[in-house]
Length: 154
Image: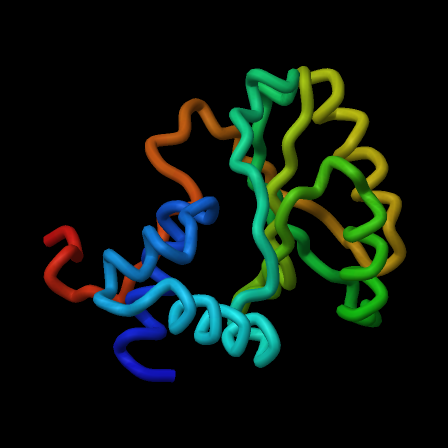
C-alpha cells in the first residue's frame, strides 16, 4: 500500500459513494487506475465493505450506552464474544485490557429497553458483572482517521 492508496482510502472514508472519476480527480489518477486500485484494496481485505451512516435517533434508537463487561474467573472470552454478537442491541464490541474484558456499545429506543438488554447481557455465561455509562450526547462518531498528523487536535 502506497501514499496514493492511503489517499484513496481517506477519500472513501469521507465519502463512500464517491465515483472513481471523483476519486481520480482528488488523487491525480484516471478513473480506471482508481478502479483497479480500489479493486486490489477490496480483494486484499483492506476495504471490507461500504455502508450507510444513519442517525440512530431518526430510526428510534435514541439511547446509547457503553457497557464494560467484567468476566467470571472461568470465562471463555470467545464464547462471551459470540453470545454478545447474538444481542441485536450490541452495535460494537471491543476486547480491552484492564479489569473489564469487553466494552460494548448498545443502542436502544428507551431506558426501559436498556434495562432489558442489560438483563440479557448479564445472563451470558462468563459475565460476572457490568458497568454501564449512558451517553448524554455524541460530539462526533465514526470520524475517519486519515493518519494525517497535522490534523490532530492539540
